[in-house]
Image 1 (cartoon, protein in one colour):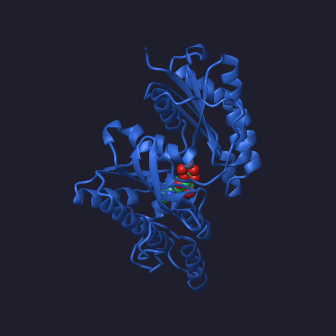
Image 2 (cartoon, helix red, strand yellow):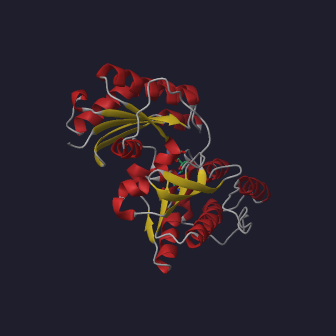
Image 3 (tube, protein in one colour):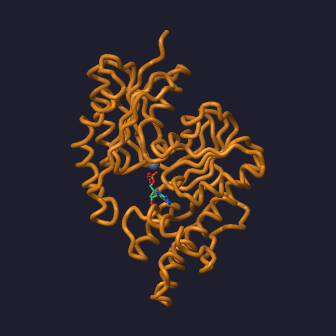
Length: 334
Ligand code: KG4
Ligand code: ZN
């Protein structure tokens, strides 16, 4: 039997994305980011869903075109069912349900964070298991032990803000644009990371949990008391504080579970200091370190299709069309 062709759709937040896979091979991966939010300094949910409504059909067309396919070639559809913004999730899941009904093909709802977790295996299928994945995005910060493509355990998560949220909030406090992570990353290269001692939340508490809200508050007070503080030094010191905690906890998990590979996934994995430090620490211990390419790190549909393709292969029963979107948090599955 030839490998199934799967169309995957992802609309959980502010990116409209579609991808076509043949088996586990990605034939196309199209992402359209919504610039409209930059103007407001954050995502406006109502605008996000309207932009998805406008973008979804052309993006799906573009993904099919790039993969040299038509809808007649599709064997299944995969779609993100959550977590995310309800209005955004509804657009993608309704489009996917409609198409699957029209074509009479199965539909696989996929959990957005699970898809991020396996983006290292999408990038490099030879990675193997067990592996530790640090999922760091604007909405999530978790350390996960990956046992197989269908079994994982969440070792710890943030108790308050996500790492990306911390980058975004600090960028806003120092007057940089949205999303803040790339701005802080750029300015940090020009500053002194030792200039200001910002707090490293829960650094030595022995768990795999994180806390970044204290950092944001500390930056606010610092700026109040030092209105002329060089922004580059603030950015470099904040980034160092965030990266110190992320790297130290991830490496502790890698040692404790004796894994062969560490994956950093989600939007914050684009951070240059995080990438460099994680790969240096892994190299010291002969552990493979994988940071997937940018198009697999940001919100994308290839990672959604990858998990669906695996489930299709394993003979999982596809869902009927009655599944609903969900904004629930990540939990362990076996
Ligand atoms: O995974 P993602 O694209 O969207 C979700 O949150 O699901 O992650 C976006 C987050 C934003 O908070 C953004 O500021 C952060 O990733 N980010 C970065 C960098 N690039 C993106 N944070 C730090 N350094 C970067 N270079
Ligand atoms: Zn995401």
